[in-house]
Length: 196
Image (cartoon, rainbow, N blue to C red):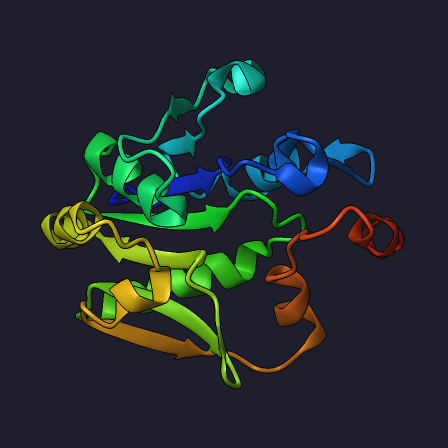
């Protein structure tokens, strides 16, 4: 287990496309997405935080820390902020709550790379695509993040321009692309069910 990094699952969002149901609770291959994420990461981190504005939806995960945003309607950065305010760890590894196919080896490789780099955040990159919601953030950026959120701007990629980010280049492979797959529309579920 990695002692200095918390695993954080961002399970918030209004989920209007899914009738208000948290995307993390959608069933893929017979299991809720959040259950699939938990199985993948629970033996990597000794602290796992679920950030959600509907804690009652995740009561079966009471063995994790379940918290809510302090900045409401601030998107993923609001979840990142809440996690940083909660953890006592040096960094957080943030996962979008709608990624059903996380790869343990990729996660551990990213953690090991973060330990080697001196940076505020380590973000994976495939060609020109970056994935800030499968990324590690140092808790040293908390004050900058609070200042940014207090400005009323919540764009993740704009915030990344304000901190020291290093990018971890990854191959454009089926495994990598699958790891970063997320659910955007109900119609995606048909394709994902065949991909389990």
